[in-house]
Image (cartoon, one colour):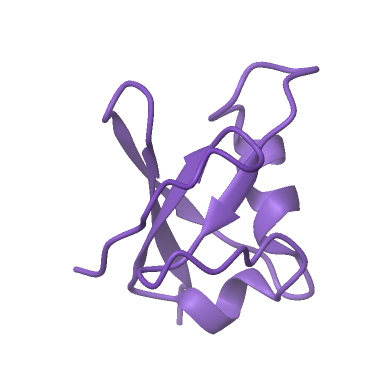
Length: 79
């Protein structure tokens, strides 16, 4: 079974569905997929606006998470 998470860029509103690997954190999944340009700092938030950067990406399989600037107060959204 494949675990995928959809990420939404809070600044551009673009989305990308990424296949996440076992043991991979949410932050690693975004960085490894190239969803955010290398060297840019970012945070990932769930639908409640809680930062989930260091949580296992597989915990959010089938969900949408928002990627934005650290501390910018963005709110995520579920699908």
